Length: 310
Image (cartoon, rainbow, N blue to C red; front, side):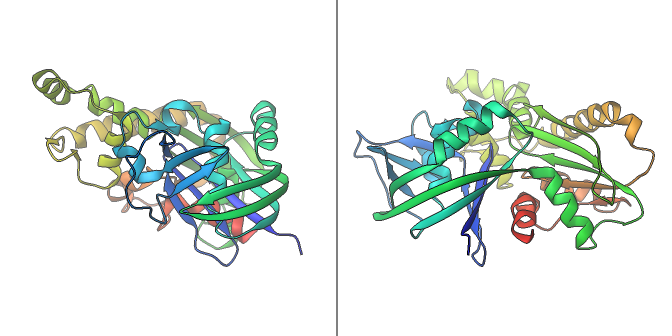
């Protein structure tokens, strides 16, 4: 039997899973704490990882460190993100294949990921040591697998095509697919996901007035957390709820206008508009009553759940 491990390393969250186990979800942020004693209590979704003679804190705890490294700002395809976030999800020794989700097929990125992962690895996660032998990496298009699974499970109307929009932390992907699995058009658009909305908030008159008054520099990663957790407050002090609805509306309308204009030639037979990804929940209330729109219960897990179901 071939052991298969599933990985979706995203700009905002990284999700890994083995069949039969609950997916592990971590914020795609890390901090190198090799030469510091400033470490707090390890947690399952924000572990400490010792790898290649470095000690890293991954996830939520890293956001509280000074100058954390974020995938949304640095690039999720880089080895310094791919390797620790992929291996940190394995909590027992593993030998086998990694099925890796990507927004688009890119030979350079795929070669880099293969070179990073196909090897023998020794890693310590939260004080426990593991040995892994990754023999192969297979790549799957993340939005495509979710649409195929949506048709298969009856969540999408089977007589029409689907426009699927995967709104991630940094990148938004869209694909128009027929019920038979034929892709009519697809595109991956960088820098229009949650990072774009976070920057809009940071650059608003309200937040800039706070920045000037208190001489504070707002961080994109922390702003994204304030959006994702629904608090609409940066830290404990800077409430941006008064400007958020308008900025959200402008951001989403601009995103949809750009996608529908670019994909216009392929929309005549579309009866389903499926929104997935970590930012899809931001517009759930806005779209819940509109016919033809479908947002899964856990849209951030749609791609990994579809891959697990293959």
